[in-house]
Picture 1 (tube, rainbow, N blue to C red):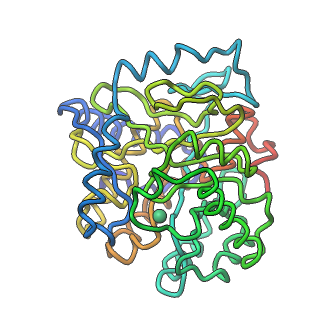
Picture 2: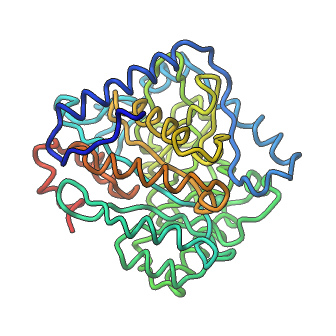
Length: 385
Ligand SMILES: [Zn+2]
């Protein structure tokens, strides 16, 4: 990774791309050389002591992987004749634009789950202090999925004022984690709409600005979540552990609407206009499996090692330009002392690449609703400031 210390300004694309291709080649060789293992996932490192909960949690997510079945169901029912953007977008692994891949921006979504408070906000503040800019000179924007537990809303208010997206991550974030699987539509409404109400009242975030949710532990009936989103007026969910066939070479998923859910996801109904922003697997074990949240990978306090994870994940998305999620918890910075430096270095490097944009989840959805080539992005209003 030493060769990846970018010192160029935006616009030096050939040099940067050459360096990137070197990284990608190394990453792909690693990914293709080893067997695939099933995806596993958990969310809260600090709660790993609840072993019984997490054991069943891993087991429940095994069903989400499946190579050929995934491919078949991605294309079987949803067609461009029946499903047209911006209202309807098929689940897909290729970009939705009618222009070459080189004209597709590399979109990066950085999101943080759970609470911000006096114990962790200094880490967020030091990220904000970097003032990363996108190619149109507008500030980079992140997404914060906020729960009520332990949250200091004055910090949420500050994040919203600075232009970052705030999502709902429930009021209680309760245990046991199976509660979320069994929760009724009304219970889910109480949790997610209830948290939106708190964000409005306590942090001054406008009701309509809270567009997305993430279910704690990524555990819930997808049908009930989709119904709750429709009834409560949210726009998207970002809780679906998509799985990904790293060794087979399947590219990561793009966000899609649930008009025609792929069958293997076991969603029974159709939910027109409800967006799903899936979590693509992090390769934590050199092709032998991974997790869906970055901070669940077992990383040592080693900046170089963490940068390796980040660049592998980037390379995996870059070849199809699928939006890359950097999904994590603010508390990661407290648990791994090298994580902040690694992430900061990574974002420093990304921010000087001319095709890379650091965007909120909603901004990424806006691009998919209205695919726009790189050459026209400086006039793309949803990304303006
Ligand atoms: Zn959480």
